[in-house]
Amino acid sequence: MKADKLYAEINRNLLFKSPIAEEDRSTMNVPFVFAENGDEKEFLDFCAERGLMTLKGHRSVGGFRASIYNAMPEAGVDVLVPLCRNMNPR
Image 1 (cartoon, one colour):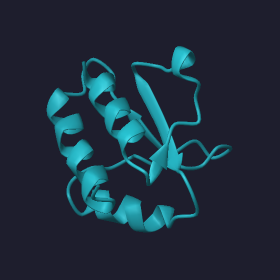
Image 2 (image 1 turned 90 degrees about the horizontal axis):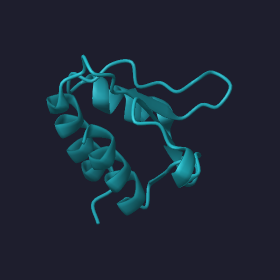
Image 3 (image 1 turned 120 degrees about the vertical axis):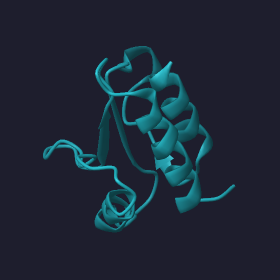
């Protein structure tokens, strides 16, 4: 499942965290934020340079939001997960 792949990376990666309790997480919109202070613009630019757009989070929450509705191919998540990993190798 697309959401499972992305949540697994967010949970594994020390750079990111989910602001949503595990039992309340969506399978269609995956919000995530930096675990500590980070440069959101740098990450958004890093992703955009690699073809991933519209990851900016909700204006009241900030961070990032991956919308992975049914029409979004799993290949998009398969690109995003390694990008998250490359921002913070562990």
